[in-house]
Length: 378
Image (cartoon, rainbow, N blue to C red; front, top):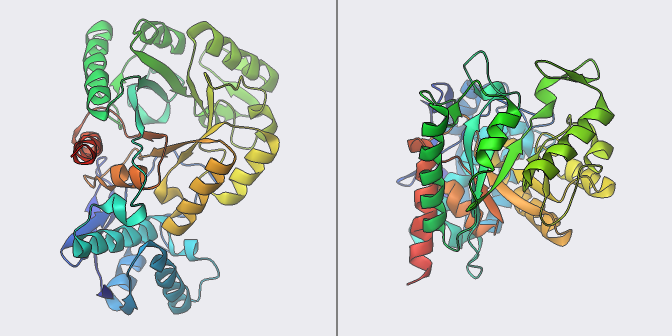
């Protein structure tokens, strides 16, 4: 496939904020945008969204792309044109949308599904992780839980059944808590406390439960500032371990602030308890290697637009596999209707896919996963 001309434009994400969409050879790809951002994430754009769009629309690429690894040619071309020392300085949102559009175009030319451009042999399907009740930075109500997400991880053997289970419990939760509104990610809003929410979720025996603590968002002046208490580092570690034991939490994301690699290692790790890095690792290889050296995590969030380069994303998956770290390919709070996340999860052989439960932006990814499952059974 000869890559020559790109057309980029601004669109709005699920929060009504601007992001980038790219058209190429009859396909389109877009990037989500995050609200709860770790400080180590790659910047979304180089200078601005407008700058990236102007650059992409003005350049003739003239690059031959025949397989996934040819994305290296594209990255080298952009570095040369922009004189950037690191391709990620081009901007993670812009780079991700661009590379995804190229892979989609290649898939169309070869009459293959997108995931087979990345991986033609493996067939493992990721388990969904769904945000059922929200708090923290993603919620609009004044009196919300401190933790950012309360998660369902179903245990069925198929993607279709996992999706059905999450949807069923999601609706049951609405009735239990009398929820009337959803937050940025389609999770139910509530004024219940963190432990009250966990008490409700622990009633459901056909799912495992988890939390995204997003601890950096309420860490100030060396303390974790809850609404009615202030915990120092040691007490925060003890409190999270208490919650893991009390509610048998399977999934614990960002239980401590994003610089505490050593503290993460003191959270209860086991195959039954995934200690997950997100803000800690920020989809950056240097941060992942540091987390490995400290034994901070046994699972990690991978957000394509936290990094930008799909070539580097593959390296991250390879590092995680080598060190037996479970991988969770994740959406962002400001999503688009692009469903490529499901194909990337299958192509890179992620263990889990975190893309919410409800709203059309989340359902697009889950429905695509079910579609992939159906095609693999043929």
